[in-house]
Length: 235
Ligand code: NJP
Image 1 (cartoon, rainbow, N blue to C red):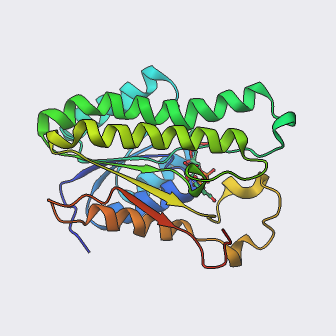
Image 2: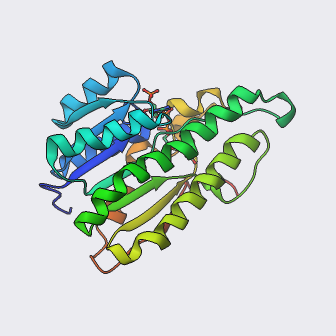
Image 3: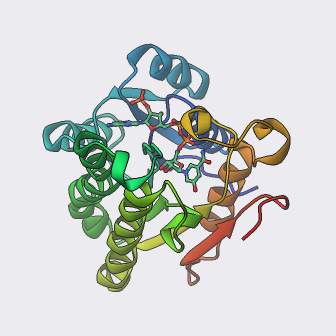
């Protein structure tokens, strides 16, 4: 396993699920982890387990997003890894979607990714290094019933990340996007038709291993896109 000692990693959505698993694995590899989410108590628990820093924040809020980056710099002096994982999803037929649900998904999944990347970039560019890892979705590339709003937000997040990859390559900054299939987290509790999630879905730790894999690529290599889904999932 790559030694991440002295690397500083920001993980959004670290209070539970996939983000929590990523934070724990990066800490195990030696990284100094900045844990970000809104739920202060859960966040404090992860920060303790990773011996990292908890920064409660709403990633969709410009001031909060800037504060995350400022706190990371104030405490550790640099940023090596930014994992844009925070995300929300709710699922329904298009005609039953509320405008509030639509706005919330775009605010967190798209604007949140944009705000964190934007605030981090001046530091990454000054360092001439850094790795941004976005947790997108298999539905960033395909559509499914009940998923108009979530899917549209994940397509948009994917476009943000793949555009950014082209814009920052010459600065020595890598951007990798991971596209998970179904993962057994709280996220799927509101989703119809996943009663055996424990047996049929990926585990959060599987996605953390995918993050580890893209981070471990040699310096001259960037893994642009990595799809990971359970064997049981049909396409
Ligand atoms: O979801 P969940 P996952 N500001 O609900 C945080 C993608 N994905 O781990 O703020 C800051 O357990 C929330 O924290 P809190 C998915 O799109 C998943 O499964 O305290 N943080 C919590 O830590 C998402 O991008 C599946 O409520 C905010 C975390 O986000 C990522 O995986 C499939 C926030 C969500 O934890 C992690 O999802 C797929 C905000 N405004 C893609 N709003 C899957 N699970 O099947 C939420 O293809 N958070």
